[in-house]
Length: 246
Image (cartoon, rainbow, N blue to C red; front, side, top):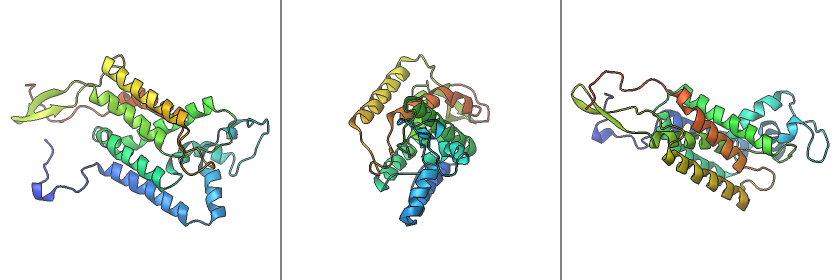
């Protein structure tokens, strides 16, 4: 069993440190961006945002040269998730990260949690690229990685709970993840897919027209990556001490 925090010493924010630190890191990146001169901020966007036209001719048929290429052709697929259009965009993503990152981080070691987020973010960017080839509109935001966390949470909350005992005390064992054909999981996925497409149809954006910070394609790519790949990232069952099933 894990040690219990005394009632008078309960943490103010009951979330894994890796989630809290990730939110702080995103906030620091945004503050640093705001402190930059306008020209430097635009350069940061050109270097760090995900732009489909980097990977071929733009929609207008022109083959553009982007700052930092070819290095940024590789790095922007990661760095776009660290940038946000404005404070509202950052706050919304931080809330979602706290809500969906917490249950996932409790099942993964910190480094594996971060790797999982990056994989989902990359999957979101690739799916966005597939459906927006040649687009010159920069895409930024952590939404794709957070959508992957939501896919993982779908596997977790639809899994059967297994109760047992450790040293004579009640314990909840790490339950097997729900199968991908589970009806509840399919309903959960359908709701998120519908919501993502609805957001895309309403053309909601943050940070003005210069950067597309909400993209339903990236949401779906990240979500399906999280849904399909979460099982491969999980560590062995806990608690580690053996107990008898009750």
